[in-house]
Structure formats: structure tokens, C-alpha cells
Image (cartoon, rainbow, N blue to C red; front, side):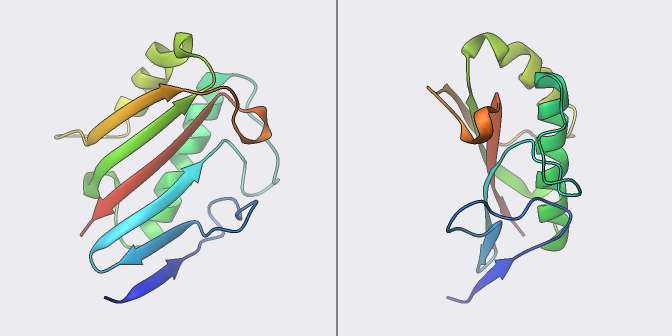
Amino acid sequence: MEKKVITTSGAPAPIGPYNQAILAGNFLFVSGQVAINPVTGNIDAKDVIGETHQVMHNLKAILAEAKMDFSNVVKTTIFLSDMSLFATVNEIYGKYFSGEFPARETVAVKGLPKNVNVEISVVAVK
């Protein structure tokens, strides 16, 4: 199976030993994205609403680089710093999809990179 690294300046550069995404056959595995603004390299969002929008914009840029969009997403994983943020993140997340939603799990974790409140990874298929 052919494996290709997907990289775009429209999303933040990895902050560790991983890639933004890997295209394996028709499947795209996108690394978890946090609210790093790819232009500034900082967390510019002031709250979980801004964080979630930035995360979704980062995912959108990576999907676009692979010639896909949110309609190609079949699976997502959402990590939250606290489950009390679920309703807010869920509402914003849902607006980025139309038609059929992907499979998903949402978990609260003790901590996330850069002390953010939300991280989302996706799997998409052509």
C-alpha cells in the first residue's frame, strides 16, 4: 500500500515527531489538531468556542490539501479538558458537517498539549 505524508501551511506544523496527516491508500489519517493558529504559531483563541473553530479550520486545511473535505470524514475523536465543555464543542463541531455525520467518540482527559481545552483527530476516505 502506498503511503504519503500530507502537509500544509494552512495548519500548524507538528510540535512533535508526527505528521499532520498520512494518506494510506484511500484513507487519510489526520493527527489530532489543537487551536494553534498556523499564521502566528500561538493559541490565539480566548475561549473554547474560538478554540473549537480554530481546530476545525486546521482540520479543514489538512483535508483540503488531500483534496477532501468534511464530507469525506468517517471517524472523529474529540478530546476535552472537561466534559462540561461537551455541549459547546458539539454545537460548533456539528456546523462543519452536512448530511451524514461520521462515527465519533468524545472523551475527557487530564491534560492536552499547550493546555488547550479541545483536540480533534479525524479519519477520512476518498
